[in-house]
Image (cartoon, rainbow, N blue to C red; front, side):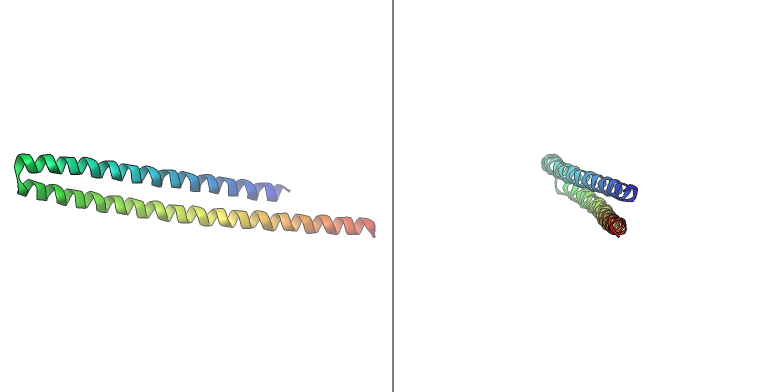
Length: 114
């Protein structure tokens, strides 16, 4: 039972970590949307004030920011995949421990009858 409880606790912790990764991914998406809106407004204002040359510089900065955000998103997805893998392993271990406990209980019951 202790092995089952431990495995189930590890599975719950892994599921909690996976939920946290999903929250972080959602926050990242919101942040990217907000940055895109701010950059679009800044680009519009810059175009009005400074002309095409400065606007091109802003586009370059935006492309760099998007690349950085994509990189961060890829890292978050990798972390999520690792956490999901750990959760699956913990669930599998819990199920295996539970099955062993049932077999041992059945064997004990059979030995008691015999």
